[in-house]
Length: 377
Ligand SMILES: [Zn+2]
Ligand SMILES: [Zn+2]
Image 1 (tube, helix red, strand yellow):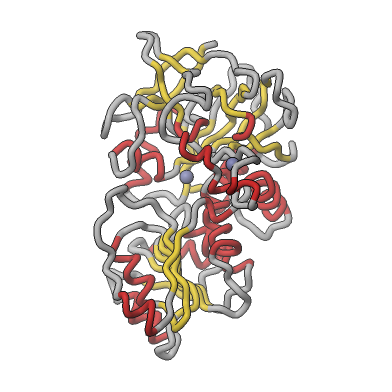
Image 2 (image 1 turned 90 degrees about the vertical axis):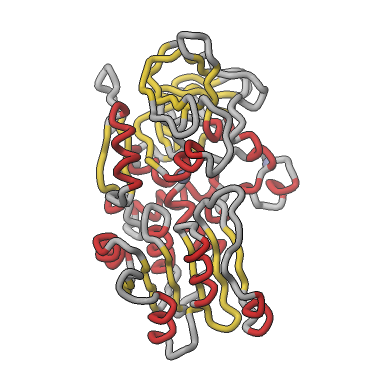
């Protein structure tokens, strides 16, 4: 079938929005009609070469849509079901899946290589060039074919143009605070970078019962917005040293938890330095694959017994946590609408990334207009 998709052919090239050919789903796969896709920074890291991916590729990994057709071996969803994509497939049988760490599933190794799990491609352009699928999903396309393991069925009343955010930004941020980061009631938390991930760490920390939540960002408007998501204090590093600020606020003790959602060596170092004795810092954002030195003092880990760890998709199990977080949205515990600063059509995808890089968005969302006008409300 034909579909419009945003293709990136080479490193640092722009998205080309064009019609391409999409093959039928194999036995274990699902054809999905996309309703919306969030615009996440992680795609961009693979376009610049910060992270390695095989190009050309159709990017997008934060999608939601409606199942159109399923392969003969797919039993957990059927045509008409509303689904949120999981950018990490889970096989259910590897060591990590069986231990409950589905975010670490061995199938994750296939997410940047291009073809589907059987090694063949579903997308090709009119010159016959095979187009890879980012995270096996490619949500910057009106239609896509994905592994059955990559779709999570959700309740039909959830608005998919917001539910898509739970595929990555919300699970990663909220999961980091409440699962991986383990915020406990009464703790002091610091979040470096309050964009699409950091803002969700802030609301996760609020839900977990943090006492003080310090948001740190160079954009004052994002700091203002963070207050609406639960930040009790804000600091702009252009105006004052964030570690000094955290120490002053906590009478020289330091914060219990610090989260780094910018992925710069400097702020990772600051997150560790802002910790109290025995505190934990977690890196959430993607850095360069060959990222050199992080400025941390190893003595901090011994004499102050600090921990520096990482968080992939917030330690979430998508099959459990995507529906759970949508239920939290429904009950008002989570704010998804407030995360979206602008909506775009697929043709505007280059503009969407320009806005992201310029710090103008918390989250941008690509909305697909269905030809028959049948987009679910
Ligand atoms: Zn993402
Ligand atoms: Zn697995």
